[in-house]
Length: 65
Image (cartoon, rainbow, N blue to C red):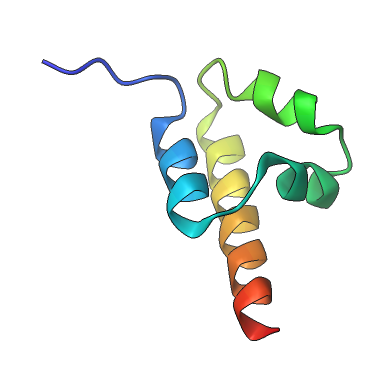
């Protein structure tokens, strides 16, 4: 049985789409370390959805360039 880390889905999307924490931080308006610290504990469903939307938006914008 594999133990999932907090926010494993978000971290998997970040790695898969090659979206760095600093890009998410810039979008939210916080420091990169704040994003990494927030991902240490499970986010609420709303925050998870917000992070996933940001990750996909960053990936789409990068692909469009």
